[in-house]
Amino acid sequence: ELKVEQNPLFLSMQEGKNYTIYCNYSTTSDRLYWYRQDPGKSLESLFVLLSNGAVKQEGRLMASLDTKARLSTLHITAAVHDLSATYFCARGGGADGLTFGKGTHLIIQP
Amino acid sequence: EPEVTQTPSHQVTQMGQEVILRCVPISNHLYFYWYRQILGQKVEFLVSFYNNEISEKSEIFDDQFSVERPDGSNFTLKIRSTKLEDSAMYFCASIPGLYNSPLHFGNGTRLTVT
Image 1 (cartoon, rainbow over the protein chains, first blue to last red):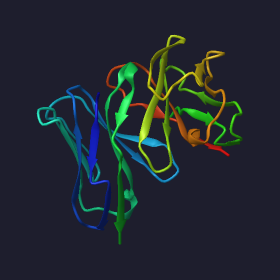
Image 2: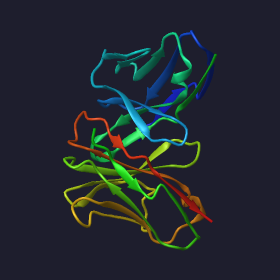
Image 3: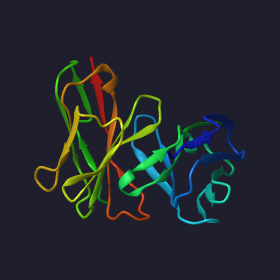
Image 4: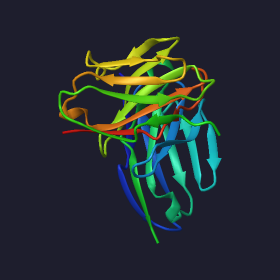
């Protein structure tokens, strides 16, 4: 059974700071996804990581994948309030669907 | 940009009643999914659907649940006899092909069972 664990589950940080969210998963498989969810809203795709060593960046967010360590990270650089949201990582895909982590609830304070 | 649309946005029903949640996936997409998210919790896979039949389903997707693509555009999730614990946000999602594409999620239907 594929398990996906995120930490931290809750993070409060100040604007301008850097931080990293970690996503560990239990079985080898390709494809790691990061999603963002604003309160009461849908899930917005941020990144798709397809292979070991993959790194993708969009604005202040950067995601990476280490398949040997079964670890993905989402790094936030110089956080701004607009990045406050819940961030989910997910593995798997295809007909089996995605297995999501519990999400990291991120609050960025001025 | 094409979107996955879901209706209604909020449905309130009494325990034991049947509900149908509706979704219109993106038109050229081939694979369709239903997920649910109990308030404040993680997103859980319910079922995947391809070529007019279920591909995979989770343990959550028991005999009370069914899916259908009745007319080539709509994709529905039916809960036959709702329970209190069915209260959740239900998301429909679709992808054009199986490999590498992220799921495109709809805005969800909040189901409240009283």
